[in-house]
Length: 254
Image (tube, helix red, strand yellow):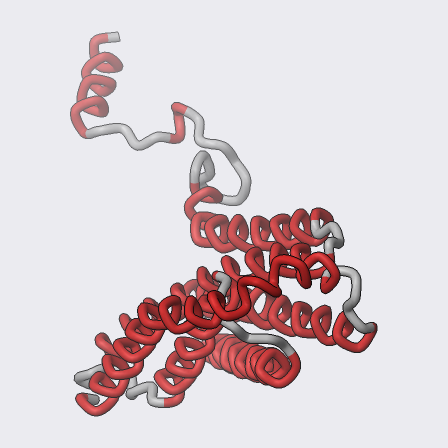
């Protein structure tokens, strides 16, 4: 467990140092290309080949499916398993969660390979910088998932905390990077991304609402309900012993 913690701290530290030094490295490249970029960028938006345009679109869909759908749905399923008492269903939900996360990592890896192979990666925008950090955290999270200790073991609580923190970070960074990717696509192609932005926002809002709502559903159902669907009436409420004594005295006096 100490080795895993050292590995995690090393990777996180390396990623932070890389992100800090990356702007200074890329700035030197920007100075060299400054004279040509201003005139050439106006033409690049309209001179994308059909192949490159398809690859950019495919890259976007791969990351949308990975970070914008599979990853959040996998988190939602494992969250719902906290309310499940049946051991068989709990095991099925765990395997669904693991399968969705593995598929998400594979799709993100395919998108990253496409970006390295086919695109100009000068790392001069937030989408590319976040993408680098996100890719490292994704594989770190996958490694931690495979090194899951047995329930009840000494390092289980530390593992659970790290897995939760990294999972939350991956989800948030992935969602943010999809928005930055849509803006980068608009800047690259001059095509409108308003419909895609609205669609993605609606999807993430629904998943977030369901994530928060399902955790409170049992509590909501219990409000104003005793048995079945009968609402609570004043006569159904419990009467304190003191009130019962008063009622008995009243009846005796009458």
